[in-house]
Length: 305
Image (cartoon, rainbow, N blue to C red; front, top):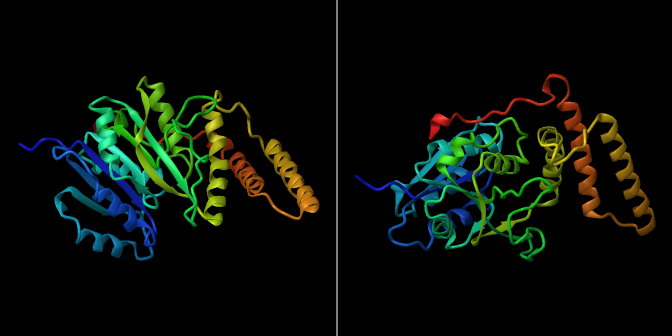
């Protein structure tokens, strides 16, 4: 009888023809102990570009084809749902998550396996940010877990979790917005359930920063998600995010931007991001009202373990 897989590397992608191959090659070329066994799971979430062709070409170069699983799931809505689906297909004792547009270091898998070494825990690795021009942005992520006013959390782009813990807490919450806060919510539920969360500096990834359009879209969704997170975790954010509060915030931030532009003839990207997030707050205040004020979490059953 073959020994169980130590790890499952999970990559979810949509329209990643321009960057997916880099990450696929990185997870394929891991330098590991000969006794280490891991599988790679790739889930395409309805790509309309050449992503499927990239996956097919990559499969021709993979030696251990038996340890690779690919799925096409165009109808799944939101990254929490796609990641949960992938986890349900996984056989590894440790689930490793990375994003399709980043690049893991060649010792990424081994670092997580060595550090956890059978320990039931959630772990986050070192995230090294780079922009599209290749310039490093060392201050974007900390050399530690990501701290908040409530509890620390890992980033979904670089994390590992024991399979047993993942299903014990119900995986990612599928009722959250299609982007934003699913890793924060997951990390907090893991800690509230009494499981440890640790930082593994040796598990490094090269993080690709989003372009302006994608970044503003993410800021809007994060603004929407923050409203729901504040209602579920008042220790994190005690603001009620009423329609009136959100409207006043938009007016205040917009006025500050206009005043600065008149004075300096320039826009500050950070201030614009705050304005976009404020519109997301307002949308969230309207969306999570009445019956939808705090939708029930959509979690995976414990029986999936």
